[in-house]
Length: 444
Image (cartoon, rainbow, N blue to C red; front, side, top):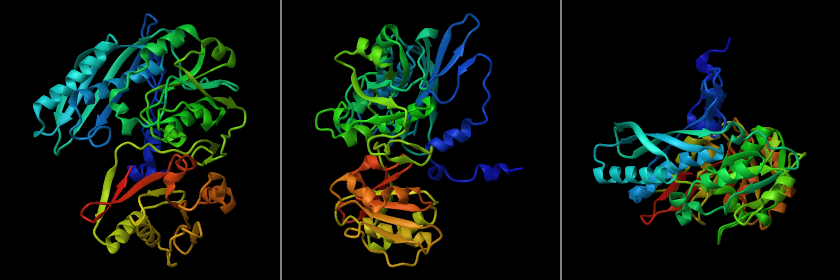
């Protein structure tokens, strides 16, 4: 028998969000009136009269989903609209909301009132009302807003993630990319009206909302449906000034991602829905990038969002020591992406990572060699530098896919040149030089 403490070993940051959710929900059992449990945008339950209800909860955290000093009403709108977007993704309509707010004692009352005003306005836009909730204090600063929603959906209009079929068109309801830089993550409108039009006028096979980004959410939909996909970056619908890589990786677009047959697409096609792909029988995308978590082939991506500062180093030694502490906790198949300007300290941080894993080789920058290997530690280390790589097609020539398949640690400097080539489990670190001269390492 496996000891429960062994089964639950590991820290949250080490196992990642996907694995944490899997562990938390793996032993849940559903009652007979639960039609859809964990794993979709909403849970679906049926009452004794045959009515279907959508259940959803979502939260935003200061420093992760919004910055201190952000306009309070915008913060409130975002908190409510995120949950409303999930109701839209199931083809439903929102009815009632419960709101929980947790703040420190020093928080200005006017700011909390502004949050509530924004939530109320967002809910009322779609005929939804806030009917209660909870308030709580935090031991330190910061703020948390949690929204629980109840919605309704007709059985014939309820769309799940798991119905995509071979040959289906993959489409989105709007442009992608640049959400944080532009501020659109605060002002987006949940696609409830669009979803209702679609479910009432087309036969959709699958649908979900794009909260974590196309590169993270599309593989989830495809995995749930058991098919593959190809994406052509040249026809991705992009906001002005946004690259295909940003459209794939940025996240918080809050458009709807949906699939339908080619015949349905021909009927429903209109100016506000953009075709981006077609599902395929072979699970490859254009660059044939392997997703080692699912043993399928899919996009590699990361969610930009806010960053968590993990260290400020005032010397090369402190930077190396910070990397060493992190290296001591790394496990096989870890992938670390290091970004930052020239001279920011990526290689010194890498030296620490290598030291923490216990490798004894001399660590040098792979700028010219492109890849350095260190195999004397407890785990093999493969240290890449993308700085001098001009085209992504150059990577296969240095064995990129082969190194990803090894049970080692992959470190990539200048990874943001080709973010779409990294697997979803990649942990991204931003290294920058502050005005004080200190080197700050942040985890995205």
